[in-house]
Image (cartoon, rainbow, N blue to C red):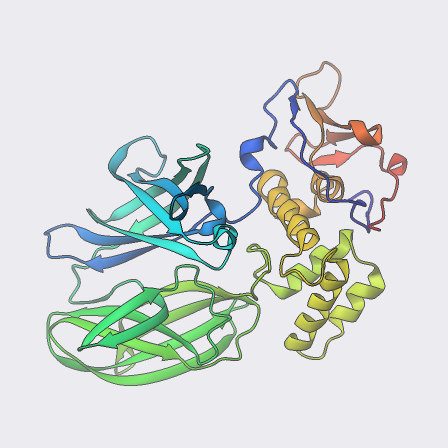
Length: 427
């Protein structure tokens, strides 16, 4: 990077409409979402339908995502969910379900709550294979659509022994011998102080004795937790509940593996990613060390060094939280708009400007975007004669323009005149 800007711009800039340049602006309004609009968890289970797998789809929509209107008995929110299974390129539709949801609350405060959500569940039967799943949540009042896509493997359960997907459990009630499970769709385990419970199914064509290994590892593949449990496997479906008892897992992204073994031979396995983050933190903060690195546009070197010098992970988190609390314009409110805006910009920079192994927030365009927010106008010059491809960002309120040149021809845009760029300090 040609220049290192150390401070975020003075105020959280309000978004302005964009005047599109010669090419499509990668920072259009549809790409500037401010919050995690909904959560989803897609799970594989064995079905009794020949050649087909049962896929359970859970969609969790926080109340704050939906626009509520005043009605006689309180406030009403309505939205439509469309969940589609397409081929890997998204060109062919295999199956789709569309349904409507209504939420009624009595008090206005609940309508903007992050902590209260509505959960939907739908079941699909589909052949094993790799699919592109497209999930759309459309607010019926303001006609705003939130969309997520993911590639998903629908698994084949034709082997003698196999395991379903892992479901993380938020809470569970046992009544008259029946288990009522509320799934942890976000897969955030930070608030489960007594350990975090899971559920999965083990399918076998015979009775047998086996051992199940539960392994939790971090992004560096270091094992943080392991326990081996002997079990008696029945023929058919075995419903298994287990609680990961290690509560020392702190901020970060982790992998849970479940392995069924017999005399050290792995008979079946399944795995799932999950994370731990504190309440109120932006959803894209899933790794503490990365989050500390990303402070470089708002914190001083001394502040960053102080956070990194924490002797334990917990102490680093404490210092990190204290730093952001110092930036909160209203410390008594649980929401910190500066904190949220900063990492929202990082998230958008990563989506729009990542280049090979360089995350978007470390690029020159990402740097300017994080510091100043979206430009008022973007003009692309991809095919000018006798010039390398370049793009110009205009900030009218600042009377500034920034030119980024693709020196290599491979999309690695660099700030052309870094010495002309003033330092903007957060006040």
